[in-house]
Image (cartoon, rainbow, N blue to C red; front, side, top):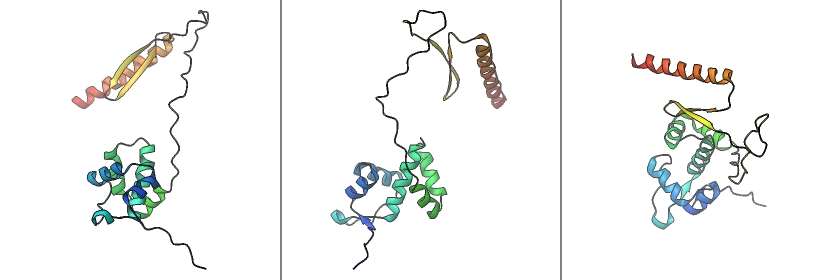
Length: 160
């Protein structure tokens, strides 16, 4: 009775399918430097264990919403053992986009058939927004104003 052999080399399509990406994505990651280039052998080019581990780690980091530049930095920072542990981390599936939208909150004393809620959008800093309901209580609006003022003070301090 022979012991089962573990696979250590994959063709491009097999590797891509094993991780759940397209072959084009694998080639792109090689081009960006996220994956090392495989030894080129024409149609017999194969990818190794390191490629599989790195691809799995990339998928985990993408599930954490990291952009590719940050993923590249993280891959360089991790030791081979840390990379392997990261690659073994289960990736939770993303929520389905078909999730029905939640109804807008109903205001006390208002017509229950009307469910329109309007919000003011405040851009606090690049990449940071605050949405304030037009029906927010005075205390909530005051809190939002304090947050906005703190950020403005912080930005002014950086410019000085």
